[in-house]
Length: 505
Ligand SMILES: Cc1cc2nc3c(=O)[nH]c(=O)nc-3n(C[C@H](O)[C@H](O)[C@H](O)COP(=O)(O)O)c2cc1C
Image (cartoon, rainbow, N blue to C red; front, side):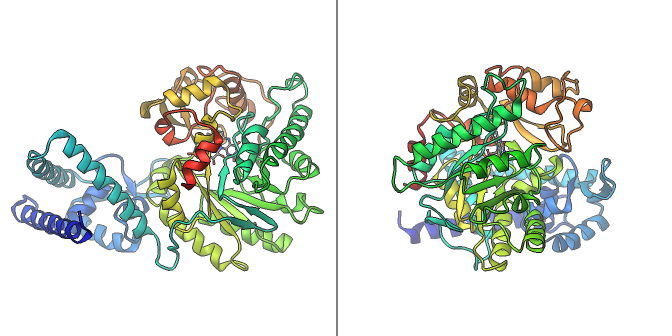
């Protein structure tokens, strides 16, 4: 079909919807509501109370515009404001009984109209129509989020970070317990990407890990770095090998030292704000440093702190969105709003980075990125590169236990849930016996070797690291398996090369 014909069809559809909505308003039992006000009530929703930021995110308007609308709805008796029971500083909005009735009547009318409209389509045509509308909706939502000056088209261009060139702007996520090992990172780098080894309990499979975890981790890290470099060097146009080290790990400094001594030129650090990282890299000035962040605020704090203390800013940030596997940087109650404002945050971050320093600080985006289409969306918003975790965890080359790979491949939406980790942050995980106990509030007995800062240790409901280790050894019923929200869409095991090719072609 020609573009002009599609244009005409969409315009007719749009006009018809506007007319129907106006007609509904005239015949509704709630004639004092405008169409825009009904949509505001729908966005507030009939479920749990929402914050103003969440509702503004859903409607794609500013909080101040929403405040004016909500004030009017308050006067008319459709909504009420309330304080959050856990944090009294947070104000939420919810529907009154009258507001609920208005939304229910509106939903009922819509359902009737849609039912009538699709009665002329076969089931297959109706599903195809709904899928196409979803794709267009998603695209418009993303496009609307991006200010014109940031839109740059979706180009997978080589990325330069300090002295390092990454021919294919794809990172594998650093995944603990040996998932992101030398073989995975080496193969990603061999395909032109940035191959990242996770230092967190990389020595889990060493014989002396139980008695001497630090030495076992250091030894394994050195060996995996060497292995990754060896694999990468099979392609003269390979990308760099880097190491991901959690700054919330009690032995952060030790592993940074080991990575630097091994000649690593790129360090990624998450699990908090890595404010001491440049100081630890003194004497290794050419090393590229990349903090993992979950907000614009975190990026600003790190840049301000590093500038003042070390007269530098990071070469790049990895912005990890709310769909990512692993522990997240958002509070649980922020997840929904963070999801709705994901593309806006990328664009906002890009704007902040473009205005800082000489504008060379790059933006890498992670969380829920699986395919070329996902890459295109975040690149259009301003990302310079992408990071994928779960899809690489399933790959032939990853160090994940076969039981974990199988569990990812078998999982459905209902198998993925959110728990609060001992440090109080949410994490998406695969449901199993251990998770059922955690969700039921049961304490899982554990010992403590004070491996994470900010963890309540023996007082914690469970030991995150102990359970991660259990799963890493194959016990996926009693262990903890971190998992990206889109894991259910991964249907088969691929090689790293297949994954990389699918993202760029
Ligand atoms: C099993 C697993 C373990 C992870 N471990 C870490 C980690 O130790 N440090 C870290 O910074 N991120 C960790 N992450 C997050 C990944 O590096 C990556 O950013 C994330 O998985 C991207 O989201 P995706 O899985 O939807 O692609 C982990 C993710 C998974 C799935």
